[in-house]
Image (cartoon, rainbow, N blue to C red):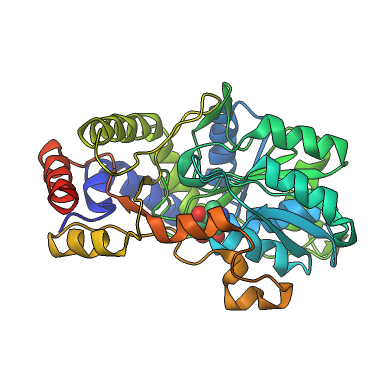
Length: 370
Ligand SMILES: Cc1ncc(COP(=O)(O)O)c(C=O)c1O
């Protein structure tokens, strides 16, 4: 089977360094907010050329804490794409705010600025206070257009950069362009921990201070709780692993880009659409996503039969998920999102994918199409 990601291959050459880093944490008994957390925060801030990087428990909490720090409250409306992982809208709903869904751009699969604009014209009743664009699959959303709308309507913006750590928007790192950026280091991400981990990026001092308090039970000083906070600290063991892996990230992302270029070259002039890269962003191919003119189900089945893992990220648009029924959306509300959910598929692109494996994937796709 050619999997969508092979972490064993990635970890093997780093194993000694990772084992030593984990041993150090155990030897020092420094499990909660240990030195490794601050070290990783500093390294990540340097890497992203951003003033502040705050380690939190996971990427979902990174969005949630950023929303709270920016003053979003129960009942406020927050615009996000209907085509993204559940956690984007889940984080919004978790603080009692209302996800207000927008459609996507059919080329990039990212939130459409036009769709946001039409929502802002129509939905005054929603008391919209923020936008959470997602840099889906590792490519940045159209941030200039989104920030312009946010400025006009006085909205906060949080970039959900869970899938795009290391990608760049007009020369700036994903997650550092708006008020805040949220990152996930879920094991399958381009930079993945050995469990759950996340981060908030910001250039604003007050937000940095607020998030540090919020992630640690609302403590500014131990046992003096100034606000209602959460237990959402980045685990020291995860920070130790991430410290080792961070220096490899650019090389891994480059390899993903090379693989994507090769796959796109081989799949040219066929009845299948290869990923589109907008001029304003780099793409770090967290996922390499193809689009068919018909439902992708059969091709996925065909590839599975050939021993190749292929999947749809994400098969059900969020406005049609049962858990969001209370928001009152219906089928047909976001045609581009719904169309993407049935016509796309992600195929392997991970850094250690071998050339002959890519050739086999291409051959198998051609067999289906021709
Ligand atoms: C777009 C997006 N947002 C948010 C998250 C949530 O991150 P986590 O799983 O670390 O909570 C993820 C990752 O799973 C994601 O892909």
